[in-house]
Amino acid sequence: MSVRLERICSHLTRAESFADIGCDHGYCTQYMLENDLCERAYISDISRGSLQKAERLLQAHIQAGRCKAICADGMQGLPEACELVLIAGMGGEEIIRILDGRIPPRFVLQPMKNSDKVRAFLLANGCKITADYTFFDGKYYDLIAGEGGGGDSYSDFELLFGRDNLKNPGKDFIAMVREEQAKLRAFLTAPDMSRENRDALRARLYTLEEITDAVDEVL
Image (cartoon, rainbow, N blue to C red; front, top):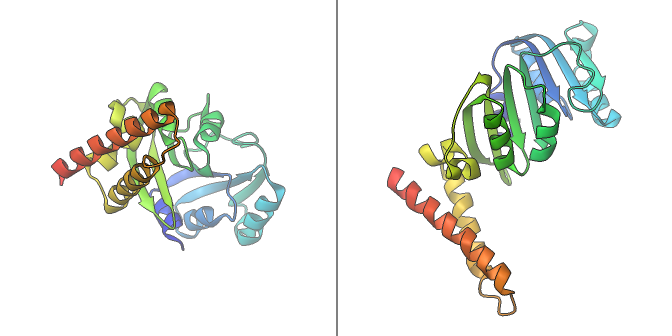
C-alpha cells in the first residue's frame, strides 16, 4: 500500500456505513471491509471504467452483500446517509460541490488542490476539523478529517496552510514550504516579469517567511 493510501486509511475508523466517493481502485473500501470496520460499504464513481476496477477487487464482498457499487456523480445514488464518507483525489472545489447540503457525520477528505477553500467551506457549515496536515508521497498532499456539527474556528494562516501543520509542523510540511520559497526566489530573478506578478510573488514569499518563522518558534 502506498504512503498516500496508508495515511488515508489511518483516519478511517469504525462506522456502521461507509461510502468511498470517487473510489477508483477501491483499496480504501477493501481496507474497511477486510478489517471489519463497517457493516455496509458503498463504492461510487462517475466513471464506469474506474468503478469496474473497484468491483473486480471487491467482488467477494459485493456477492456477500456487504458492498454495493454505484455509478453516479458524487453522493447521488447512495441509498442511505452514510456515517463515514471518504472523498480523495479530487479538486477542492469538486469536493465542496459534492458535500454542499449533504455533510456526513464523519468525513475524510484528500483534496488535490484548493484545500483552503475546503477548510473554509467546512468551517462555514459548522464542521469540526480533527486532522488537517500535509504529507509527501511523490508529491505533497493535504488530508482533512472531521465531523459534521460541533463547530470550529481557524486563523487566516490556518485556513491557508492547515492547522496541524502550524501547531505541530511535520518534516513534510516544512520541506514543502522551503521548496516553494526557493522556487519563488528563483522566479523573482527573472528580468522581464511584470510589476504586478513580481508584487504577487513577493507577497506570497513574505507569507511563507512568516510561516517558517512561526514554525521555527514551535520547533
